[in-house]
Image (tube, rainbow, N blue to C red; front, side, top):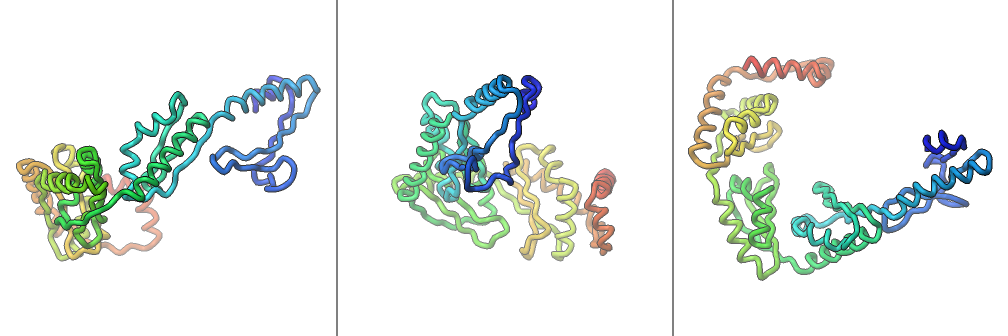
Length: 313
C-alpha cells in the first residue's frame, strides 16, 4: 500500500477489520471452504487518472493472490493420523501440476494445505476421503508389554513399524499406569503389525536406573538433573544411548532414569550416573522462599544462578 501511495500520490483507505460489519454493503464475506481474508471496501482518494492508476496496481496485487488458497483438515482421529502422514506423497500427487505445500500440526491433529486454489481443493478432498476410508476400515488389537518397552514404540520407531507392516502402534503416556499397547491396521495386516511391534520392543537393551529414595530425595535429584540438562550431557558423551530423565512432578512411588541402547554402552552410562549420584547424596535439599524471590529465580537472573550451580557441580 505504501508503494502505491508513493507512486501515485493517491490516498488509500482500508478500514480496520473490527469496523467491518457482517451485514450491509461491502462487508466481510468468508468462503466456507478456505481461510482467505474477508472482503472489505477500499477507498481511493485523489485525481481521477491517478486514482485509476492506483486501482490498477491494486488489481494486480489482488490477481496474484486470488488464485491461492489455504484449507485445513482438522480433528483427524489420533489412531488414523499416522496413516495419513505416511501418504504425504500420494496427497501431493493429487495436486497434479498445481503448486502446493502441506504442513502437519501433530498436537492439533490437523493438516494445512496451501497453494493454488484448485490444487488445494483436490488435495484436501483426497485427504478427507482417505480419513473416511480408514475410519471404516481400521481394526485394532491390544497387547500388554512392560512399560519400559513402550520407549521403543514411539517416534521414528513407530514410523519404522508402519513402513514395515502397514500398521501403527499407540502407547499410553509415560506417567499413566497400565502397560497396554494398541496395534491399528487393516485386519489382513494385523499379524504383520503384531510381529513388527514385538520385534521392535525387544530390539534394544533397556535399563531402569532407580533414583535413591525416599521419594522426596528422588524428586530433588530429578529436579537437579533436569535443571542442568543432564540428559543432553549424557547424550553428547554416549550418542548411541537414549536417555529419558524422570519428571519431579510424577506421581509414581519411585523415579527412574530410563536408558535404551546396546548393553555395553548403557552400562557405561549407568556407571556415569551412579558416580554423580554418589556425589549428590546429602548435597540437595528443598528450600522455602518468599514469593518475591521466586519471581527473581524464574527470571534471567535465576538462569544465571542455575548456570553457576551447573559449572560448580
